[in-house]
Image 1 (cartoon, one colour):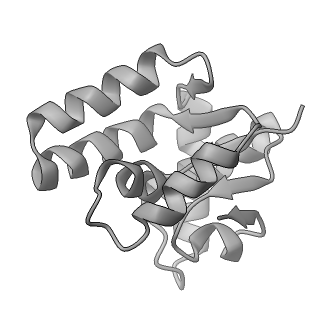
Image 2: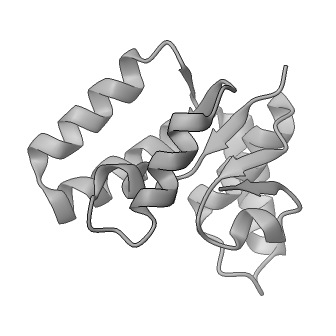
Length: 132
């Protein structure tokens, strides 16, 4: 089954109407018909960013929406994923990938996702297709 991984930047762009990528994010989400996937680490990162920039209420709204969504599967990063992500984090020291990015890489590989909804170059550097 084809699915799309949603990164922190995607969640943030959807939440912040003033973000330069907001309209592209809304267009993508409005037209997308594929199931979405995100991880516990990405959700943590996104909610922390949203709370710090947009406030507690907006973070709770996004968190509730993701956690109760029928269209987005929340995958919890496992201890094995963390170990593999740590190896990737050390291996790709020349990239600006965060540890959360490395956990996303490992989870995407584990569950067979090859497309990310992201606005930075990290997922393309990892060899994934990117939307929008």
